[in-house]
Image 1 (cartoon, rainbow, N blue to C red):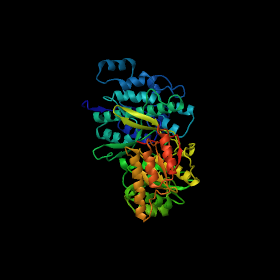
Image 2: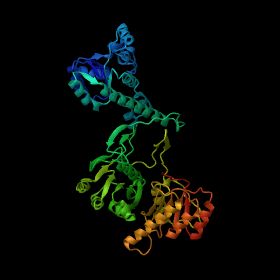
Image 3: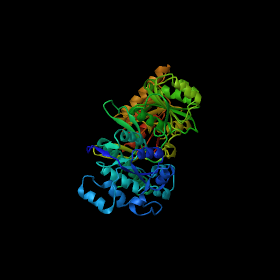
Image 4: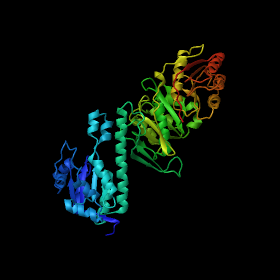
Length: 532
């Protein structure tokens, strides 16, 4: 047999996930592979009537300290690490009565699942695996001679190759499995390190950071067809949204679909479903219409009215269970994705008539105040920051103009600022009566964003035959301060009556003076919402 092929004669199995274990081990036994095992895995195999050696027979020591110490021994690690064609290694095995292990099958203590279910500190620590990662790393290093399996999903292909190859595995398979094993331990350690950092208030920026995840979906391509892509699910408690979604129908989700759907759902989650129904329509990760209403269909109609041209082929996110009335209206135009916490059976049936339309149910809404991190890659590194969990309802609004906003203006100012948080900078949002009427996004100057938002509002008026721009009587939100008065003057000229912005510019006094001259009411939030 060539060095490319390594015959498996002895396997060590130590798994916390017993799914498929007995069937897998049974087929190994039929191939004449000796089985060695630990603890609960050993009991499960013995109960199934399989011949299996307990690891204590290899080490000469019983499991101790509640199972914390059982495999950390030369009798195990020598068998995993010995290089088969190295005379010195073989002499060491013979001298100490150690037998080689050709296949290691390990999955780790469920640390991530323990954290996800909200277990206490001590419980989480107890579910940190030590022996498992040590064995995995040993076997992975010695993949020239040893195969290592860390995922139940690999059982089928591994058995097929063993049975077709007379009990042997190829070098390519061993390398592939070693890569996956190292990635698994890296993700596992990352989950532990990040959880511990979260338990220590002073560790907001620890000296070392690691991020990991498990493959949720391989994607056909990335942002463009020449880019490869995949979606990885992070360990720990799942934030409702793209990581928890259940796709009921429609085409496979693309990279851009997932990115835009995440933006849409995070935006609509700013609107409390107990207060009002809300709908956000997103295109290229920017809102093109957001509105509240007495019902979802009313909220959708009002959101769509802001920019129906951009909404074509967009993502529709809802903050309540999708009902039949809303579903019937949404499917009237081409839509890529609908995402909601849930959907009625009637709504599901209505959407089913559009076979390519993806209907996604997330099971809940993400908490806009929830903690977490956002990560962006740079050349040679990562930018990591706490997610923007600032919510306008928690901000003390400071009136800085002579005129104080009316109750209606206050409500619209808060609405507009919730939306502005999710618009790419520079962001300007016009809103009236709980609906956007003009949005300017992603411009290099704030005055250009103001002009674009005003133009969108004027265009909306032309569509419905209104005599005046929809910005007339609206409020305007800016995600960051106005560096000059020109952006604010553009808003006043468009017909806005009140402004909400963070404040903090060296020219705040000039901007306030311009607002007073135009008769505008203006409030400062003290919180910027840059989104690049």
